[in-house]
Image 1 (tube, rainbow, N blue to C red):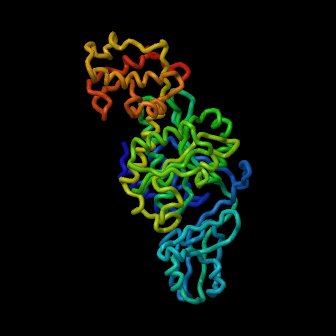
Image 2: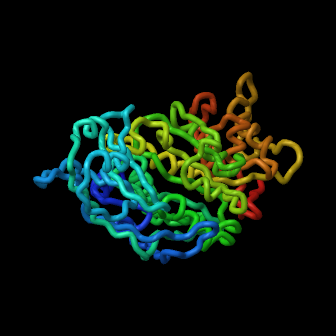
Image 3: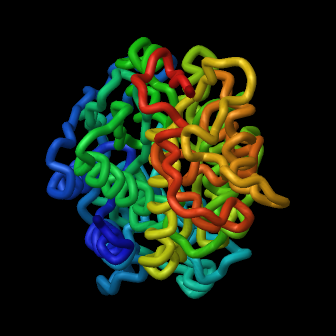
Length: 447
């Protein structure tokens, strides 16, 4: 099992790569991820290809960029931070004064020590990003301004892998790689998703089929929908966008567009049971690829479980989002929570009692043979569960109704050891309570 330390090491090795919507940075990142998850399949979509209402832009690659004085001393240097250049900047090689350069400079007055992340994907321009303090010290020039980039027909690159299960019902795990050197907003998602893929592939059996998608944010998800929409609408039963999941702050949750999906219910349940506090946002506060998966006409049951939600932490979209923001413990916690969501999905069933009236538990060894005050306490928990086994309540809803934690309800055989007030006796098997028969139409009979 991969640990948070493993994930942090992967992020550290990926951090220097300059990624964008397209280009060799994305390919290099995916090639690295393939060494961890060899079944990952890479796809190329040519520039100019229509994808729903969008068109794949030209491919962008950058080799170097700087602002220098006329003695050649670099004042702003892409080699020091790939955030120094506006993403998708067209090439430039000119000498200019400060007045001409100024409209092409970007900084944050409210965060004077941060280099902002700025892009212009669909309108050609160029620019440099620097800290406010650096900008104020830049001087009046003249400057040698050079961006050694190409912006020409090429392709958009994405990758996916399908890990088959016992059924054709699918769970979608979606993440992105299209940002340069930022750790929580960029790299935490891919490394956690790869770890999930490695864990899923190691399981001896899986109830669901798992589809993992690694694509540039927004346009990548749109391309994926344009190629797989009918299949996804027929097969996907739950899904998560995996992003911003590596810091040490509180967990966050963004529901699907209408809420109430299986993924929504599982997410809330796991967060309630697993973490001391978490923050729920409205879908109106969405900002990642849930915008595409949940859009009208797609309507996939996809939500987001994060640590600090994008746009809410101070380092967001700046050079401050470094490898000290994501931590081994933060990545481990994010991985654990999404893994618990998947474990709950895998074990989730709807139970159906086949006899009217309460079953007689005594002959099954599930009720005390001598009755005295308090003797039925343990059995009451089982009876409370059975009272809602009508074929409509799955494990998550049974837990909500009865207060019995999902890890207990999720297993076929549960020792009713003391869990708060859940019982005193040892290991009367729930296999005798939940009949060990075949599953039919998502329901299993009891008694």
